[in-house]
Length: 144
Image (cartoon, rainbow, N blue to C red; front, side, top):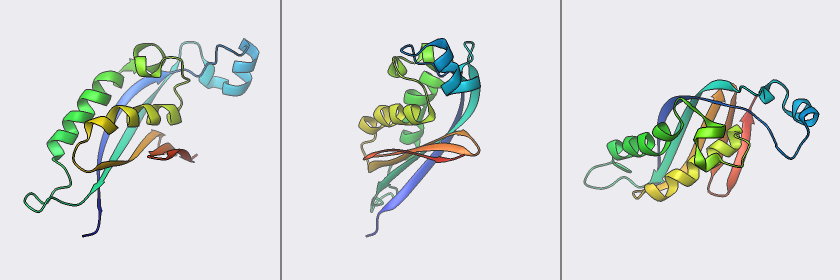
């Protein structure tokens, strides 16, 4: 049987700022520009999560869609929706919450929770023309 990819999409809103405490104020402004606004800025993120596997012969599903929805609610929405990612999401502590780093953290949160099939891809859109893909072997940035 061929492998099937099942993808679920959710949306959440969050704010963040890009700032590296090891750099001077001037260096942060030069590197991150308006994303270094000390008050932060917000995005309406779109998250796509793809799970790979063979459909169950009894149910015809790669995994229970309700279970995946519940996992995304618990692990992503409750942690990140309407939050300031720099200050309110412990999993991002000490990291600059770029699209790449957020996608990687989401992967780390989801992978152990998905017990049917295998997590194949986490795609996080920061805007319609900018997204980061996270796969088992790393992160890539696309769009823009």
